[in-house]
Image (tube, rainbow, N blue to C red; front, side, top):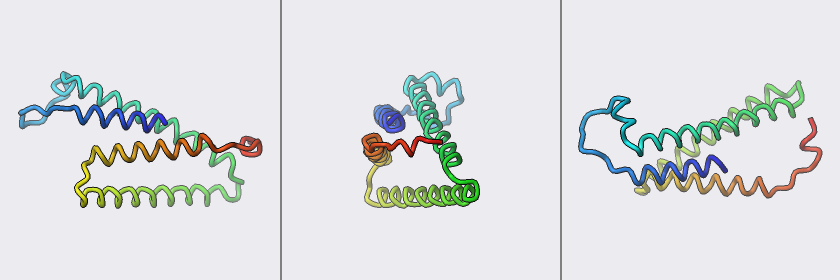
Length: 133
């Protein structure tokens, strides 16, 4: 849920950004002088923290719950599924751009879909057998 909220807030901040007329790139001190940029960096940091808080326990759980003789296959399967979902997400983004859906709208849709998936897994009851190590 933290990923969804952070991404939605980031979309809101970026949507409110008013670009300057400067045609050159900013250096770091010029970049930090704008309030939206500091907030955007902070939200990107929060997004990274929540992403790490999700993926690290997931890989740990995957390694703990998988029998030793199948662990390498399970990790490989997980990596293949991750790659497949990245390709699917890329294709969906291309379809969105082909239909002239803005990047911010697509990011907001991703945040909402992520929130729906999180809600499904939060409501799913967990059996006691699933929590044994």
